[in-house]
Image 1 (cartoon, rainbow, N blue to C red):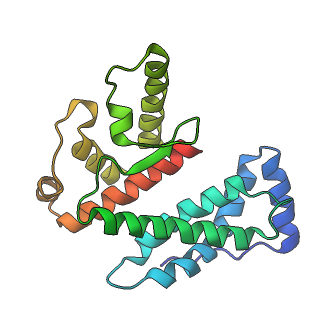
Image 2 (cartoon, helix red, strand yellow):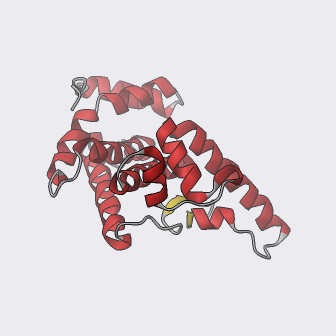
Amino acid sequence: MKAFQKPLTAGEEKEYLKRWKTGEAEARDVLIERNMRLVAHVSKKYNGDGRDLDDLISIGTIGLIKAVNTFDPDKNSKLATYAAKCIDNEILMSLRLEKKYGKEVSLYDPIGTDKEGNMISLVDVVETGEREVVEQVQLSQEIQEMYAAYEACLKDKEKLVIRLRYGLFGNREYTQREIAKQLGISRSYVSRIEKAALLKMRAGMEC
């Protein structure tokens, strides 16, 4: 596990929160980077039963990003306290999904929310059915956001796995076993890559 930067002092955190609330993206990045120790600390609680700590930290980081994005100093006492809950919830949600769907990730796994706050899945942004014109326009926007998150949030191997699994860009859909054979890795490793990638896409679409 990599070494993380030291946490911010109370004064530094207050200053960076103030700058982030005025829209300074660099301040947001600092708040995330300097709280990565907290992500590692929370992740270690779930580092059992063969779970990979780096995978847990990746998932927990999504929770930290959400915490920084939504933290309100006027309503919440400390960022660390609020972030720890968000990180914990993100990891627990991922583990519940893993338990619920077993070895395979479903097309119905949540990857984001629409403008009304309703959860949407890959199948929601792929299928059009007989939607009205307004809904079709909204769907088109959601598809664009999905592809934008795909391009911006995923590493090359994650992009390849998601592209093959869900038939993006005109490809046919492949099973995890077929992908594992193509890449020369285990099916369980493909599953972990897929789940982490979907979580990253969901976080990207929510930002």
